[in-house]
Length: 211
Ligand code: AMP
Image (tube, rainbow, N blue to C red; front, top):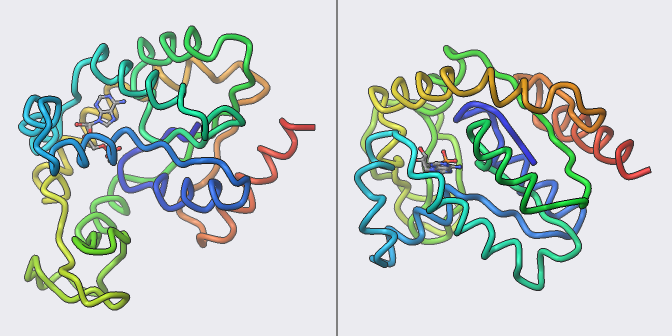
């Protein structure tokens, strides 16, 4: 399970870990955005909260995670990204996983670097690959270098919303990290290093825990 502020690279690292360990990447943010895009009842209920950078209710998100963890492809494990976000959610997750081993990694990143990264983050509306544009002259729509689709800035990556998301994270992170900090399966890595180094540090910790 990956903890860390928005923009710390959790999604990118989760994708890499999922490929490396051949387990699914379960992102609550992706699941909610998919529900919004599909216009489901859940999607309609959470759209405003997500766009504004707030958190959706604990019960709703716990239901989504519980359902997803019960699917066949997650039986051998998964990479959980974006859940839990609060100490209360962490307690709920403990109850969900029971005696199954939980490896917890915190990816740390400074706020100014996060604001800089998220200002450049775009998601392709066709192939869904998240990528960084090299400048921030906007426009919100540019062509995806992989498939030619539109590169879109996530609604919640606009700078005012990013600040709100960072405030939300800051108010919840300390108790969440404290919840796990004493466990031998908890480890904190510096998310500002080169991508490959961060991945290597994560894998080293996971492999230690699996031994
Ligand atoms: P993310 O892609 O992880 O940054 O999540 C995008 C948005 O989805 C967040 O800003 C929240 O509005 C919502 N969200 C994702 N995960 C959770 C969670 N565990 N608890 C509450 N809201 C969440």
